Amino acid sequence: MHVAWRFVTGLRATLNMLLKWDCGFCDLDTLPVSGFFNARTREDTMMTTWSKRTKAVHTGTRRSQYGEVSEAIFLTQGFVYETAEDAEARFVELGDDEFIYARYGNPTVRMFEDRIAAMVGYEDCFACTSGMAAVTGALTALLQAGDHVVSSRALFGSCLYVLEDILGRFGVEITLVDGTDNAAWDAAIRPDTKLVFFESISNPTLEVVDVAHVVKAAHAVGALVVVDDAMATPVFSYASALGADLAVISTTKHVDGQGRMLGGAICGSRELIRGPIETYMKHTGGAMNPFTAWSHLKALETIDLRVRAQCDTAMKVAQALNGHAKLTHVRYPTHAAHPQSALASAQAESGGTVLAFEVAGGRDACFKFINALEIFTISNNFADAKSIVTHPATTTHQRLPQDQKDTLGISMGLIRLSIGLEDPDDLIADLLAALDQV
Ligand SMILES: *Cc1c(COP(=O)(O)O)cnc(C)c1O
Image (cartoon, rainbow, N blue to C red; front, side, top):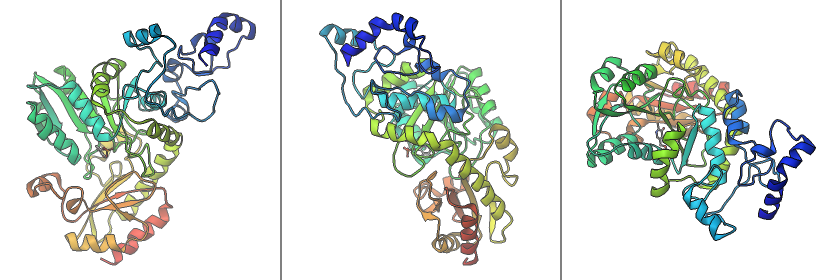
């Protein structure tokens, strides 16, 4: 392979002249030096004007000398060097598409990193073992003792733990605010604030943050903005367009989309990702494994179709349930009954795949309703192809002290639905029939 590659390299100019080989996808002059054959260069596919949907299928593809159509799994820990000098050179400076150890980077993982970054509108990405590895990595890489962080209060439980317990233990000061209150953000962000963190749409109460406002307030004092973008979905993500410095994504959710793999991604500028983020992640061991990256690459080919269908169904379900006699507070971000629907609709084309509502009658009524559902699976995850029903107060948020549950609106009557890929009419019929049992 290496010999063959040297041969090709040597004949590049001649071949280009003789063959005038430019199929739009490949140009021998711009082939990456590591020898992926027939590859678009990273820049070719990152910087095109292709829509997200096209990028989700093609961006980042590298082909080996075999010219495979479907992305290869490079299930390898290490990489071989032709000579001692080559090894030394690789350790002096690692070029694009050069690897030394899978904890630092791997060709299959790099394909996924380029593809998800391009899709959500960032220059680069570091792929992680899970969404929490991405959140923890992004925050820990950028913060040190004495730094001040402002965060929305309505956070995923593990994110709250990382901020308050872990970063708190290492001397980072945290101020929690009501993420829906722009004045609260303005009051909490100080001249010495280092970083601002929030979920673009919170889980499970679906609070919507005014991203442009918070970004402006943070950037005015030089603070970095890190958005946990799981609920917004990569298809409808607006973190990049509205100026967030980093988007951290639990790819466990809509990227996998079929309840199989844990994964995470930190997306941002090349400077941040290949600077402090990569340095921290490669030494602390949170890199995604190649099999997950490969599975995610395949999943990205269908993400646009899947997520659009799920979001359309979620809106239909919200419309069908809103005004039901046994329910209050039907919340779906872009549905008119959501108190922030104008903001949600201005920020994104769709409100995502999750909705929430309250069942009159609290825990007992909720349990009767949940147990009467036939299609919805009782579980605590979301963004699966299978629709899921969750009772947050007794499961995902059980450990939260009562006063915090009250502040966040996680009542005994709250139900969260994750909408899957089933027929919308079947789901609505299932929900209405179950409500009859309450
Ligand atoms: C699921 C989730 C996470 C954690 O992701 P994992 O892949 O489970 O580690 C973080 N933030 C939000 C908003 C999530 O929904």
